[in-house]
Image 1: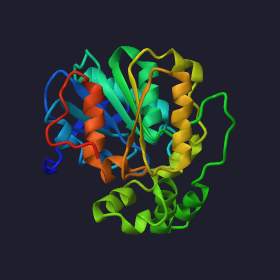
Image 2: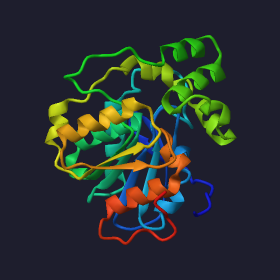
Image 3: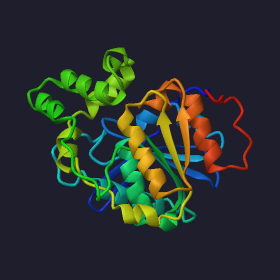
Image 4: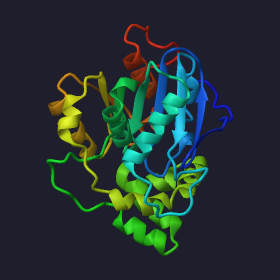
Length: 281
């Protein structure tokens, strides 16, 4: 696997604020990586160099996240606003042919919003452990209400432990590497904004109307709720492909990056031979 280089930081100045991103590689195939909760573009440290050997890769930090994770809660920290930012980024960089959109967890809902808002710019859609509900399904209480209470009380690590262990499995936070914990701490306060839109649904009719290749990716050890989301998506989009990443839970791209990277590359370009050096599990 390629070594992780220092990630160059770029900034797109928008009329209502700045969007920070990194990029690597070159070529006509462009992959847009969208991170989930508590993360930023550093989350893709094992994807950027590997995918960049085959295509151009863009990884933004959603606005409100590091390196500008402050002043939360903020009303503009919303899925539809994030998607609008990424559409503007794609157009500002002159990528008129569109991008292959990859979203993880909450980022999968941002990816879905991108595809719905700008279908002309979405060449394919990869959703890794999406957790969103559809608008014909009932609301459920956010699982991280207690997390937000702990954040407000100043117990940052206690809050993060509860959140991360819920989405990835018991004792995950304790065993996580230092760089991931630092990233999560940098973005902890974003949950104060995120909980304000915790039950924002995806319109199922809009999802069903998408005419774009879709890949559903799940970790073999992910909590069951993520599998049920993929089941529903396959009902809505019967042509969607589905893969499971072995030896991995919700953070599948970190736990088994070789398999995750191969799944993305093989989907983005089905004609391409399996990427050298990337095994299936």
